[in-house]
Image (cartoon, rainbow, N blue to C red; front, side):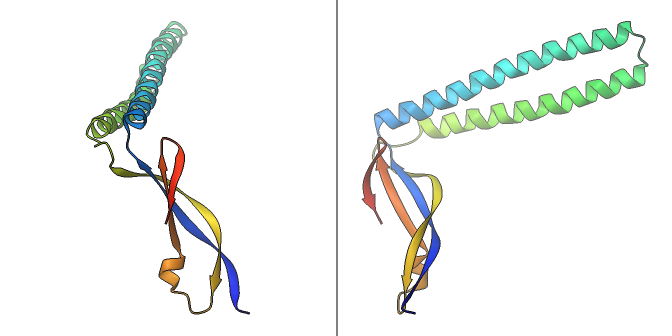
Length: 136
């Protein structure tokens, strides 16, 4: 056997352009808007649920448990919101022409005898505005 098919990681990189920077910013804005809407809905549901349970005569300990659960969920939302805001700051700091990593995929590769394994195990696809401009 002179070769064997393997799967290797292929890193996806993007060259930052004004268009890609605006697209990243818009995606983050959309995520933030969706998250804030979900948070507002959650608060409404919390208030409605607590009112219903109070009217049905639920014990205070049970109401406190419901409040704690809501607060834990709310804290998760706020953490996500802060993370999106930090990503927005990072996106604003991107320089035009800079290469950024946007993810990775796996792809097949024919590994040959005598080939350096480290070199064969990794590849990169470079995109500019969604178009492949280089394969490394």
